[in-house]
Structure formats: structure tokens, C-alpha cells
Image 1 (cartoon, protein in one colour):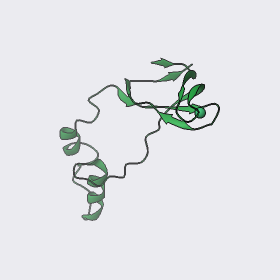
Image 2 (cartoon, helix red, strand yellow):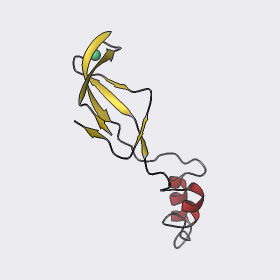
Image 3 (cartoon, helix red, strand yellow):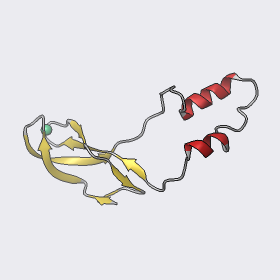
Length: 102
Ligand SMILES: [Zn+2]
């Protein structure tokens, strides 16, 4: 998917339409230790002696979490205002394999 580098958009801080720069939000490191999270599984694997019985690399976790099934990823966009430099996030996410700014 192709997106323009800048767009004219309403800035809620300036309260007017300004030129805003687009960028994709980068995914951070996983932090949740909730049940069923990949991170938790990896942590548990570290505590119990040798290995994790192949849970994180292939097999068990991949089969029920269905990793790598979907070809595209959800991408959220952030808009940086040219006047006040403040960042706003888009309400809707895009599903796309690849995102290009032109
Ligand atoms: Zn602004």
C-alpha cells in the first residue's frame, strides 16, 4: 500500500488544518505476562531446567496460536503536526503486507 508523506489534516492542538507528516507506529517489545502470551511462554521456558520442549521455536505454541497464518499485518499511522510538532494517532488501522510512503 502506498501513502503520501504529508497530508493536510485537522490538528486538535492547533484547532485548524495543518500539514502533517505520516509515519507507521513501530511495534515495541512485548511486555504482557498474561496467560497465552508468547513472552510468558518464553519466560516459563527459562525457569525449568534444560530447554522448553520445543514450545517457542516450533510446534506447540505455533499450532494453537496460529502464527504466520495471516499474510498481512495491522499497521497504525501517526501524524506529526508541522506547526506544533505534536503527534496524533489514527483511529483506524490498516491491514497491509507492506506500507510505502511516497
Ligand atoms: Zn498542531
